[in-house]
Length: 93
Image 1: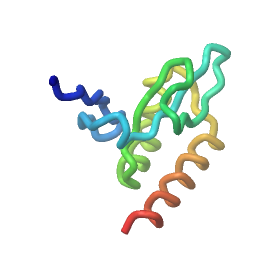
Image 2 (image 1 turned 90 degrees about the vertical axis):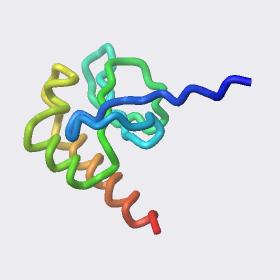
Image 3 (image 1 turned 90 degrees about the horizontal axis):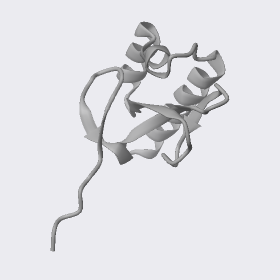
């Protein structure tokens, strides 16, 4: 039996290839709205970011998400992403 293929994606901040399940997806839907996609299945153009505070800070500073999604990212999306990262860091042992 063949081993199951693990999909890899690149973080827009640190440029490291990481398994898709370990990243957070930010998606721009066909209407142009930007949101977090925690399921990884929403339709639209997606960009991935690591679950590390350093990657979040770097992506916000360099506007990596803006460039990847080809649209200006609203502050609400950055705030929600930051809250999600803080929630993940408190859950991890």
